[in-house]
Length: 253
Image (cartoon, rainbow, N blue to C red; front, side, top):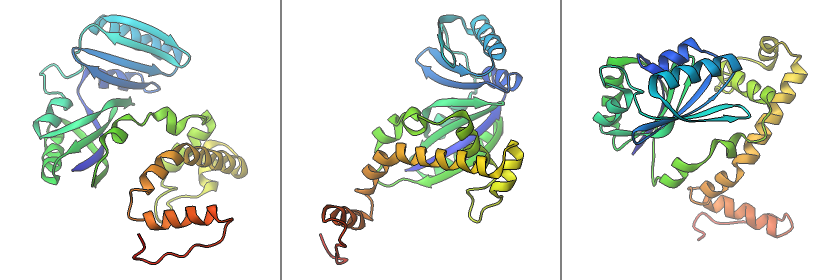
């Protein structure tokens, strides 16, 4: 099995809205014959989105939240007028997506699964026939745990981050700070954010610490099933023995 993270831009009603309202973050779940949208951003753009969606799809239910709105539509017409939406292209190539779809500045972020590398390549080819494609990542999956892949809430990973901390991490990712080798420096990132290096570095360090602490339960669940299980168990043993080192041979059970 193979997994991919993709960014796609094509001619569809929600993509057009996202381009018109570039400061919105739009999250979409397709549920049977309806769509559910969670939208956050500037109030005026959120209201424009609401008005357009209600006029186009019918707003069956609209909820106000602390960060924007949630809309459940009466019908689902999120694909382009000719009916060849990205979802159909993905399924036609023998792959499938993991909801939700996230829109930002006209680009759609998708997570995809396929049984084979060939199916994944066929899907890339088909997507490029209907729009622009940026491949964020691809990787083979061994012994997949579908429950973990599908159900890890974003709130579990990013809960507790402030806006400034989130921005620091995003700037680092966008400008290659975490690349190997790094493509930028703290000083350059801080200058771009209009902050001192020490202040920006503190935001970044706190964000990294929070994300890693949030991920700890998932990392531990993964590690005990990974090839490094012996090393992990050895470290646990050391902790249980007052910090004394515990030796383990390569063939230890």
